[in-house]
Length: 609
Image (cartoon, rainbow, N blue to C red):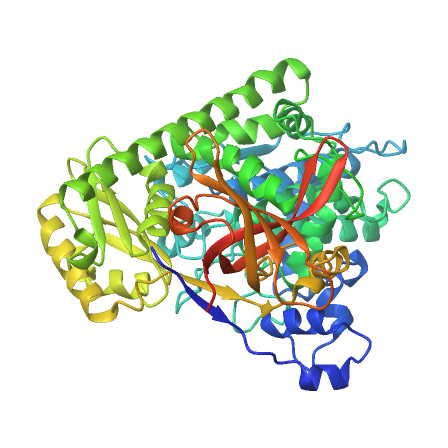
């Protein structure tokens, strides 16, 4: 499938006047990410922990901290309820452990120095992670019942709660103080609760709105440490102790794909370092079993390995293992791993997460394969169907979102996959630009039991007899909103570069903007007029392409480039040696034995324009 290249126009004239000391390429990349002449360059690029915001700027933070510290001192029952994904589990781990470690400090008169990670009392803590299949998202009836069974006085929700009006009101009426830490869309009416730590609230003065659930949990932990020290524990509780929880803050932030800008950038940058020396026994064991080295590289030319700790490590290795527990089994598996202390406890729990992740991959592959077989049976569906809508009773709901994303990337059109149930069908949906999935779901709301989402993802449940009606209406909407141009994959490039620009210096300038992720994507460049020296298919299935290029248009002698294009075998089918091509790429590094060299990670190759 051919791709359209959108190359952003140079937009640095004003920036160059304002910041003459900054290289043009950096200014271009900054401009592409929304940086303007009135912005603070140091603040935009800074990953210094000292620039983190005061947690007490957040509305309701003071009263939430006061209530929890009182609960600790008076030995009340505190329930920590986290969502079942990597963000919710990480956030629940932060809050649970922070309270458990503050408990012996606030309830005993001992004056010995606090030992991080060793002194912990969780006897009055009630952890709760909902069952994805049986309870669904948020504060369920089962969670409320569990709270009453355990005599809970304070309930802290992490990564959920803002939409559970009725249940939160019921808890309040029955004497349970609820503290909500949530970052999702704000309903018109906020729920009744003791405290609402929700920076997206219109009346919240906190200067950064994009924290995820684990990010909010970290801010809460930071506030608890600060207030505990203020109340007399400064001689026993080290200043900045909350930093030890940056590992889980980073996992949640990367795993939930919130924008890696502002405070999130700081949490992830420092979180990777803390992750490399984490004190959490379960997390250490998980890294050990994954063969992840506890190293964070600083120098681009310093030789390293693929097993270093990076954003990619977190996003594609650690977070999926946590998510797999909630998708395939129960997220308690992950939470219990991070709660465990001894080698005998953590080894089987970490191994179970790895096994569940492998099972998740197999199930996802099966669903994708079965959908593709159906599409092939329908013939040339691309010209006829602009939205994929398929379901099966044997498809586990926990992997449908991942499968839908894979299929969306392959066919570049909206995808809705659903599990057929006896009472209700449950669907996950993913979409491309130009087709707002939440609005599409809203358009069929009269036929749904429940539904919602955002522009590119959503979910819904509906009675089986409504399936064809919903399918027809969504496909009709796709016909209205998606033309041929909208169904053409697009590569958005930051800039064109010349061959002589592709150097270690450019690589270092690019990585000045790291960590990369949502809201701060890895820069994409375009090089023109490269001659193909050698080209071959590689990989067990021969679906990747390895290319050697020579530059044709630059000052001086031709420059050689090594390049790899994953899943570009079809694109390379009509390319031959000595042809002149243009390429869209990300700048990467190839390491082999003791050699480390720059490499073009190809996104697309096409004959010269």
